[in-house]
Amino acid sequence: MPYDVNTIFQIAGIGIIVAMIHTVLKQAGKGDWADWIALVGVVIVLYMVASYVNDLFQEIKRVFLFK
Image 1 (tube, rainbow, N blue to C red):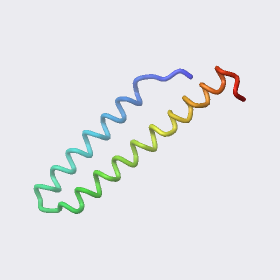
Image 2: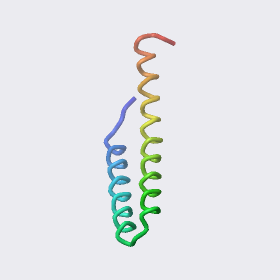
Image 3: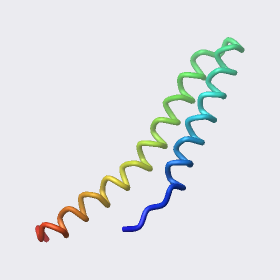
């Protein structure tokens, strides 16, 4: 279960891009679109994190022989 730091950088990159788009849309008066973009960013990151949480639970089951 080797993990590298690329996932952390991907999540940080998504956060930065979403924050920039959100700010630009808020300044342009498109507050509703900005909120939707932020929501989509959160869903994407949650999907990425959910796969790692699943791997974590599988590893815990393997370590404690719950298979």
